Image (cartoon, rainbow, N blue to C red; front, side, top):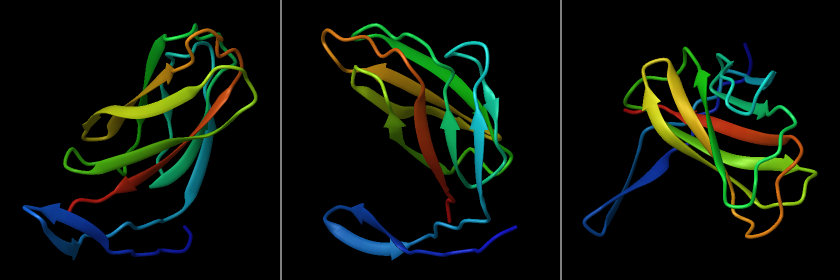
Length: 130
């Protein structure tokens, strides 16, 4: 398994800040996408890195893929960020859906002119609901 870390995170509601919930890590995993930028991947860890297939994403274009993950509940929050790329273009990653056992990542090339034409590493963390 791995080290379990619990971190309180703030919840903002009507200008009141309270701390509740935890971010727990039971191990970090990695997976590499195959075939296409829209091909789904499976990674059953609470944190991890997804390396996309080498692909061309035109300026301003988007592509989505599903991450199957048994650690995710429909009420959880999944945070993602771009870890790295060696390409031109400006990649951004967001979670566009969360359900029991899966979440959807959408990659967008924010560059107005340059295509994103290599792999992108997307990091994620599952934040469990309380």
